[in-house]
Image (cartoon, rainbow, N blue to C red; front, side):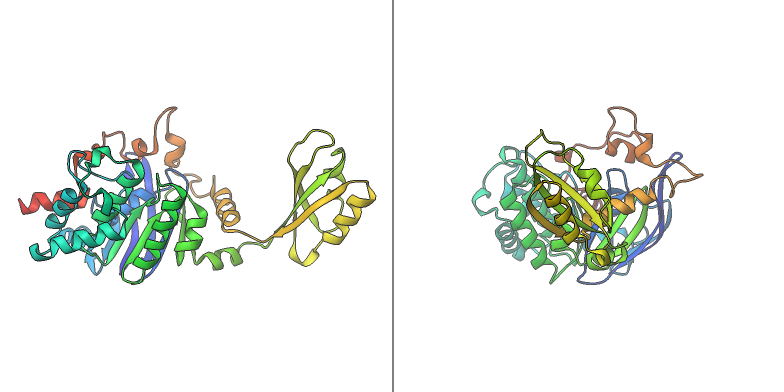
Amino acid sequence: MIEVEGISKRYGDLYAIRDLSFSVEKGDVVGFLGPNGAGKTTTMRILTCFFPPAEGKARVAGYDVFDDSLEVRRRIGYLPENPPLYSDMTVRGYLRFAAKIRDVPSRQVTKRVSEVMGRCGLEKMDERLIGHLSKGYRQRVGLAQALVHDPPVLILDEPTRGLDPAQIIEVRELMRSLSQEHTIILSTHILPEVSQVCKSVAILSNGRIVASGTPENLQAGVEAVCHLDLQISGSMSGAAELLSKVSGVLSVRTDPAPEGAVAALTLDYLPEEDPRQEVARALVNAGFGLLEMSTRGVSLEDVYLRLLKSSAGREWAGGEPPIEESLQSGSTGEEAVSGGEELPEADEAVSGPVAREAEVKA
């Protein structure tokens, strides 16, 4: 459904992305993970024909994003990081407008608008001005405009941004249901969201993909280090030193606490050298009160942090620095990606692909 071959995008001497290649199968849900400036939004903008790559090829549903951009736009629904909305239009009016631009047949516009409003929880807001909506409801309207023409591909840039916990759960459920009919690429900074929603993960750092696969495979592929979480009462003097000498313990981290208060420690160990019995014995013999002990395996967060740490200073050795390092104090990731050019305000256009298609039709 989506094929990307060696795409790069640079602004002057800075690469936003470099030599990216990946593919997404029909019905797959792929999550982009990475720090600010890693290239997630730039990649999405290329796939949505917002701008072309400087090098390489990208195809969506068999159509090239440069040579057949209008065909690509007809087959995607795009939710940018900041939803592009007209603040002086009502929710229903705006979605009808988006549906018409997206070539939804006139006799189906009312039905499609009602359907997406229902799926996105907007029924009670249909006649409300968008400018009077909360940030969470504006995000829902942005998601509804991406769905209104029932595209086979959805590209969602931080779809749960600005939502409260209950709304996040609802949107995650919606994305899971949409995956039965759509191919989805989403970016997020919320790691549990990836585990709960995505079938595959691509971790980006400094404009490159440093790892990809299912969350389970990524976790299995990292050197297995387990964690032992402890809560201890008593004097903390010497506790870390005592536990660091226990056989099988690789490292000890403590949360500072006043003398005599409950303190938390985390021990790292290899699974084949389970130190729990020795840890408990050492603590009790030294006069500490062991209040709680629990184990954790390798999480997706561990994988993410290790990959970013291992790629730092290595991916860009001898080349241009990553965009993050080029930022001056007070500048934003969007400023770096745009090369300093002023970006349009969110509520001045429907979206890059939608607005451009409207211009072509005009």
